[in-house]
Length: 345
Image (cartoon, rainbow, N blue to C red):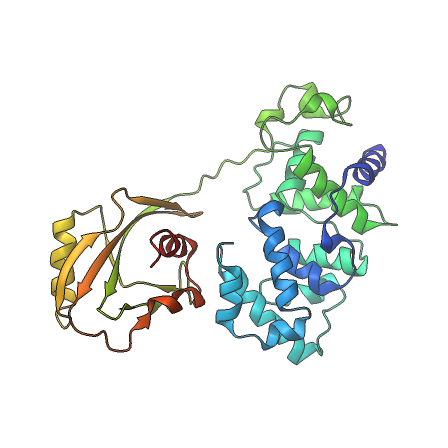
């Protein structure tokens, strides 16, 4: 089709030189695909480089401890990706002798690998004729063909995948998949695309009908929950503090944090002071003072966190405490890590 040929020509002239595109080795391709879920290339690239330096092969990643993996992942968000990635590396080593399944259906059986990621690895590493359908692909196809199907609906993936199957190059599926994703990332961007220089300016249905800003259609809105975290930074005379590992399921599982008082709404300094004295009566508390005068807002995909940090001085030595100098060795949520950096904790 003219669409596919034009797209491939555009890609060969405009593609970015990215390290995972210069190989058919499934391991770095898989790493890049996991890292770039919900993440821009500019943000993900330094992490990819750090991971491939620390863990050059899937065997190295499988042998690593989880805290080491989470520490390297720190700041990339969606930490379940890192935990699943680590477990999958161990499965690939123990069950597959370090070799990735060489087809879409086999890849789908691995933890943390869904339809999109399986298709990407199958085409990029093994040249299987299977289309990728991600946010970029939804956008390009919806606009070019004027598709008003809600991309958040249950039928959307099936519809868009069927269309992509008709368009994909049988001779070079990897190149086609890279091309359509790159086109969505660089040219057919979500907001204010420069349609005047687009190779499809004369054939794009959305442009002809002045619907570019209305497509793709996504009706379902994410419900955002507000949460209020009050972190307690205990300090003794020897600069020891207390940190805990979040083991429960939910945000930041297996990352570390200071003791926290979570409230249903924003509360004042006096309320926190009373709660500290009540909940930590075994510690001889000398003083409580706020670190940040302005509340820190940290936005996640489904949650908006309202965060305050409090300095709690204690007179006795903290039993089993952590030296402040050792804090940076632990994996923290980025908002806590940034606090530690800012206040030289």
